[in-house]
Image (tube, rainbow, N blue to C red; front, side, top):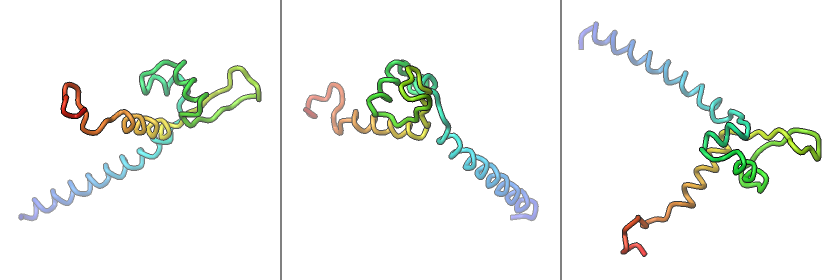
Length: 106
């Protein structure tokens, strides 16, 4: 390898490391982002009403802010909690070895 190739390689390695550290610095911020009920419902593509119901039933972890007994408390859902719920849903909806049209799996 020539001196020029080595210099280019060192620059590329340095730039990749810098980009990687910037990306990794952003990830925790995105996972801990707070969402309103409407934003959370849009994120998983369900209705606001269903998202309220999931929160009310304690299925999705959330925070409530407002006066006790308030008819419209502010509900905040963390993106990391929403992603955990989605992972649970994928796992519970997946039936190992069962595919549509595969009669041998029954």
